Image 1 (tube, rainbow, N blue to C red):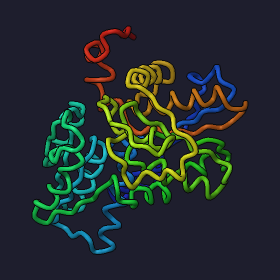
Image 2: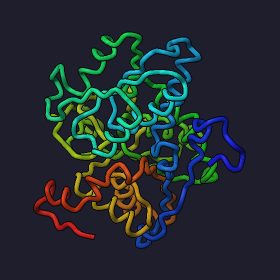
Image 3: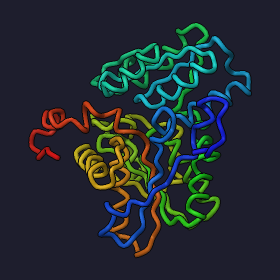
Image 4: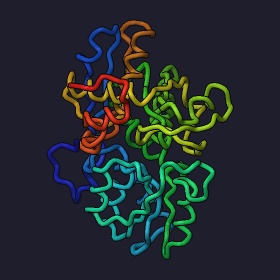
Length: 331
């Protein structure tokens, strides 16, 4: 956090999140694993960072003015960050979200009076009404609409190059062997990874992609696989998007929903860190990496958001039993 100095408003409290060592969950590995707690941002996720930076850059460049309507699509966290920014800066907000988005996120967004455009999560990627395809048209049809386009606007990556990356470097005193992060929009892994590699080219960057997303196959084969449905929110995509900087990533691993959710709950039980499913995926990938690299390697990962978005899903035994009937569900 910023320390004891009072902020001008809540936007001043974005960033400067703590890093903690995961000494318990990684106790049987020969490496040190550290996690940056991005759920400590005001709206509970790393996306607060891009919400502020991308909007303020658009303001400085005269691309947006008070009274305009910001439009984008989101798995929920960017929408929540933008709701905070828009409330303070005098913009309207219209967000396209899938109807599979967690109940908690939808309730938060409605409480903040965000204009929601709900889309059917089962639509094929090439449908004109799908999550990715409908958003530019929604922006075009909205009077005073400004399409932020977090998936393709490299201001997303710039956010993390200017803030998240330098924070990690300073907190770790420059001693980082591996950086592990989920690949969602690509902004975090691209911006942080590029910053760390500029400071120390020996730093290796490892991406985490959910089974069903297209990034893993494209990274390893330069071929586009057919996307498939998955339950994780905030990771992966059904299309290649411009914010994913494949040249920054040294390796990419794939994880299934159950493994990610199981690790998410283990993180809560063992480390008392209540995070979302993408965080569980990142921790699983970090542990797998720690078991195959040399001893005493320092691994840093990102815990992107808070458990309070997933109490009706990942932390709900009944929901897990419904989605994974062949898996043992319990404390």
